[in-house]
Length: 59
Image (cartoon, rainbow, N blue to C red; front, side, top):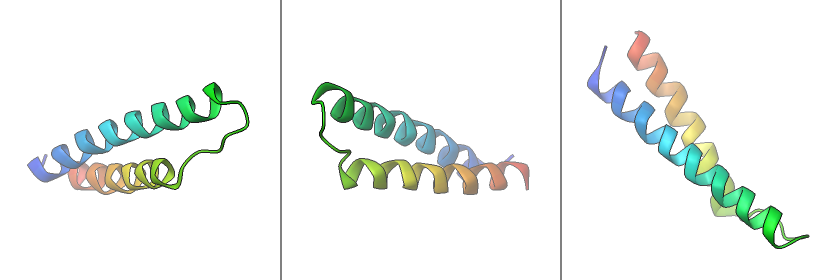
């Protein structure tokens, strides 16, 4: 178990949560509005960090 892997996994969980809330709030509250590029980038970075963090934790 590595500390950087644990930190990356925790940070990715936070980014995924915030990004999904941001996408949900912009797409569901304003009708036809689209998700912003920043929110999609936040979720993408969260997925990448989570994948790398899990590999570091298991490796």
